[in-house]
Image (tube, rainbow, N blue to C red; front, side, top):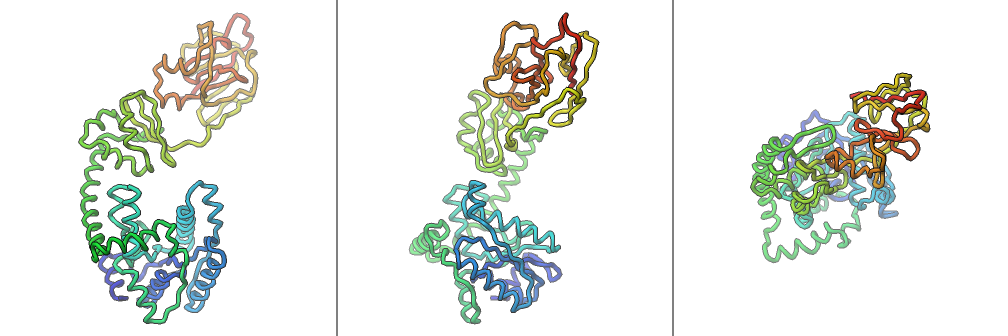
Length: 436
């Protein structure tokens, strides 16, 4: 079986004798087997063990086992202990997702610090088949049904042609000790439920189900390669990148495509999970409809669909009376003058200095905002002003306001408030100039 692993490494050109490897080792059967296989084959490696502190004494015993194994074999091993439950709570994610994020982030740090080439993990054929069913149940799309890949960037999985039973038999025949994770038999976990209940049930119908699924994944991978080439051509036609996000330019182009919902699903896949059917249903309804994934927002504008990173809470900037300029979030120059002549330039606000209270505040708009537009005697809701000026939802999101206490004195780059204009009683002008 060791030669079978070497064949996969050579045929798929996974890594070479000169490469320096980092093996993720839990102490369980799979990773211990891979450790001895790579050691027997003569590859240069270091080890990395994560203690997620999820199984009490068992977790510590796993760490001790790996420590003894590495010392006995004179192998450098990196150890890290994580408060996984706290991280999951803080990030509002599952324990499994928390453990995944923590370990891969740490593995990448080790690779960089120690100048290692590849991370090697002990995923095998059974893991691949179980992942197929997990992704099918969760509806993750065709790409997720193609199986775990032998090589994904700097992550190598050389055991994908090896079954779990082969690993267990090899360890038994060679009297190789390893740790047993008792959580692997807990059917509350989806993967264990699939392993212990679903696959045995399907095997009653098709005894060769593992081979069948493996062959289907190969076929799906080929189909997906063809499909993704077409998707990339469509992306090039209808997507454009701008400073404030990715635009699907002219949503009618999307609607005119054959199977637009499938196309949109694939276009949005790199941005997380969106409710694509609802997006399609909202395409030609009132503009401004928003949808969210974990890290991105999607806005259906009048003509376009805009995808952008979710911003953190918008901060406000204070501007003192002696401040002459700011460079973030906008570039604005501030000055005073005794010249009271009017300037016909929306990027320059000329205001009565004595009517202003410092510090001024530069902020984004919020619901309920109102002001008195220049030339008007009545107040106007900012939302109504935006409608009159034909602001898109993107324009609203980008708009900054210059405020004196609770009053909006300038919709930056657009209109000043009539109460703060230059008049016959003005003694000093305050000038704010937006630098484009």
